[in-house]
Image 1 (tube, rainbow, N blue to C red):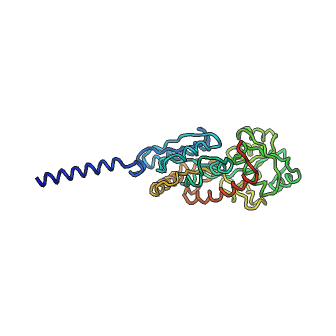
Image 2: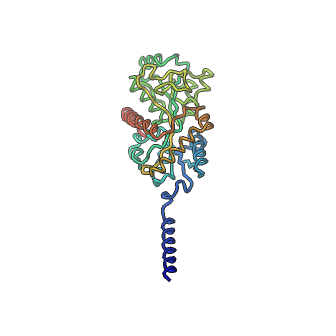
Image 3: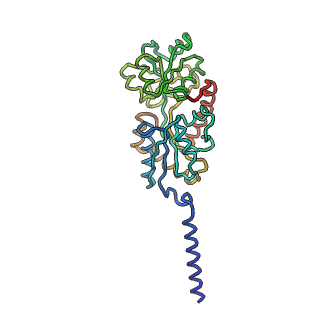
Length: 326
């Protein structure tokens, strides 16, 4: 009887323990135990969407779990960021962050989230300098020529942007501050119309990505004066930077990275970081990223360092230029 009772007690304890284990939240089990959601705060089909999907697919293949991209565009990316900020801090929701992730924090005064408190960097996917390009009819051949003309004609040399508060708008304002010139900001409803008017000569200059303007530079329809990175990059080795061209300490990059919710368990963050780096360093992925930008190290620290530079730069620029939401 004692053995029978003991066996029954053991069975009861085992059943109770199994029940408790089943009741544990998914986050406490081996991660990832279900698909991971990747929120992209931009429309489907664009370069940022393709980049996120490519890296997410590789991470999913490595981990044996689906990484499902969800597009949540709108309101300068704040809709998608707000959606990610409401997610549990369990590693099952990632967000594709780009320059507006920082900029909108200062342009929009009443956001439902604070990116500095609600998210933690996971790793960069790509960094890309923008290019200061001009219509050849402007008659300048260098940054020095451009700044000289701008000083001679304050408020008359225009730069076209995809809209107020966009990264190209902020870059122009930063150049105005650091070079001491007065340029005329001409906002458009998107990068396509801005580029079209620059090509037509209705705008004098613009800050655009290499992928947008490379063909027009090669054809002679546009002239590239400088890159906005702090140092020359391998993909643009022959083009000087603004910093080299007399605008001391000038730096601005277009970038894309993954962030997770603040409070995500350290072991989950470590696993995410490991597989993000493996995905970005995959030969196929590196090759595709290098076609339109520069391949980062994809480490948490690298991204944290970039964000530490981005926040004070754009907070100061937004306040100085008194940029308001459209």
